[in-house]
Length: 215
Ligand code: HQG
Image (cartoon, rainbow, N blue to C red; front, side, top):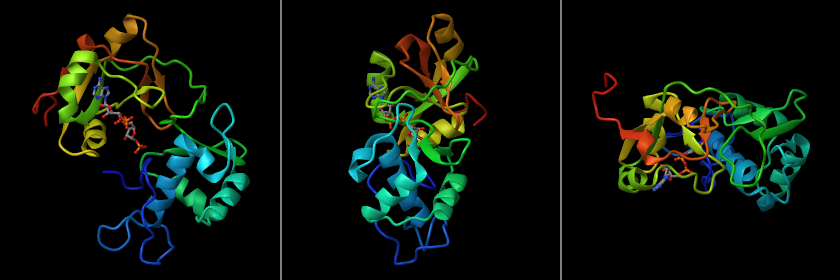
């Protein structure tokens, strides 16, 4: 499961303990780092308007503007705290620009942004983890991007399994990426190692059976 939180509703405050940033606080309750990461995912991927900011066309926002807006909306955060969350995000979800003055999410947006990743040649096989209940529909229709800009594919089985397991019992699908690329599909590799593609047709998909990859 996620250690520092993806998109979604912000977690509830963790027992008054604010810092140091740890992925988890007492027991299984999400810690401050998870709370911050989830809120950043929400704001930087889906709902910048929820704190009254706008992202530029490449998804960047000025760090000071972000911190001020978060503070006004119930999440006071220092630059140092933000840097720690960005540095320790398990999936490296966020990045500062080269000047350190701007920040954005590396992938996963539903708001219109052009991230500017160059097309890349994928490995022969990529993986996609999904709730098992979605498999019949996926094998019929192929993988669709839904609310996000792209279908997200993982470079290895373990990562795909973790992605699928976010929503309960899961299945890993293999994607014939080289076949899809030969057909003309464009792949992008995000700054945090997620492969992005517009869609995957059913004929390029197969269910990974336990044992297929030495599991
Ligand atoms: C499914 C997280 C039925 C698809 C993760 C997925 C990832 C279909 C869901 C990143 C379908 C969309 C993205 C079809 C696709 N019929 N279901 N035809 N086509 N689906 O969250 O890939 O923690 O938009 O299998 O770790 O799960 O947020 O995509 O289950 O890297 O950083 O529709 O988000 O990262 O769900 O996850 P999502 P995803 P973060």
